[in-house]
Each structure stands twice: as structure tokens, then as C-alpha cells.
Image 1 (cartoon, rainbow, N blue to C red):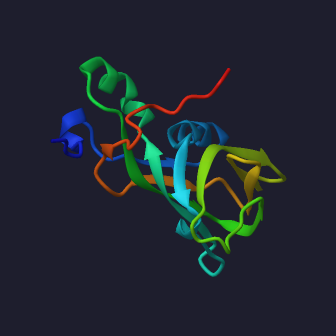
Image 2 (spheres, rainbow, N blue to C red):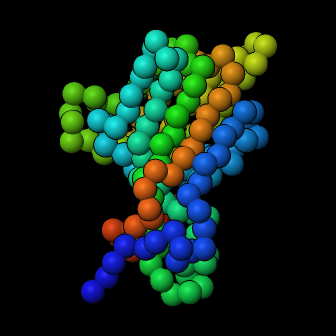
Amino acid sequence: MTEDARFEDGGERPLRLKAEDADDLGVLAALVQDAVFPVTEMAWRPSERRFALLINRFRWEDKALAEQRGRPVERVQSLLAIDDVQAVRSQGVDRSDKGVVLALLTVTFVPGDDGTGRIELTLAGDGAIALNVETVNVTLQDVTRPYIAPSRKAPSHPE
């Protein structure tokens, strides 16, 4: 019988990180690489100037320890919230097909004038979401306990 992993198993607490510049965003991008989420778990709240995703994040920070201890790799549900958003555009994302699951490849910041810029979420299959932002203000927070990755494998990318 298998059971889901617990935070205590890895000796770690849930992540709660904030990015306030492009360097910080690079750290978050590494942690959310290969996250998957249903298209229905995206929300744009213009009045709050917030765009958020509920993602199933691969726990890259735990991969080496899991392999060393011979236990399965894990995922965890996390909230990726981007604040101070002025506009949102997407390409290659069909919001009308509620069954679509998207895969997040990377998150980058393209600077503009006076701290403004664009946060780009690159998705597998030529999809992308561009967020015009007043400033980099991104939070990543784990909201569930880790669970064994359904594939029991770490994502891989051909070189």
C-alpha cells in the first residue's frame, strides 16, 4: 500500500516565496518549471490587479533527497500569484475547452521603463501568457501537502 508523502518526510515546510525583481523571479521560475494545471485554474482579477494560477508543482527542491533515500518524487499544489498586473494577453490557450491541462515551462521578466515590464509564462505546445506589470510582485505558496508524483518520475527534457 502506498500513501501520500508528508512534509515531515522531507523535513521541510511548505514553500512561501516572494519575487521582487528579475533575479528573484528566476528562482521561482526554477521551482515552477514543469508545473501542470487545468485551464480552469487560472484567474485574472482586474479590479485587484492580480493574476493567479493553482498549479501542481514538481518539487525540484526535494528531487535529490528523494532519489538518495529511494523514495518517490513528489508534487505539491501551489498558488502562483502575480500582483500589480495591468493587462493580460494569451496565445495558444483555449479557455473554452475546460478539459485542457497546461504545462508551465518557464517564467521570465522583460523589463520596460521605470520598473514596469512584462512577465511571460511560457507553456508547452507554443502557448504563452503575457502580463504587463507595474513591478515584479510574484508570490509562490504551497497550499497542500506534497503527494507522490503520479508518474513517479522527474520531468525530463531532451538536450
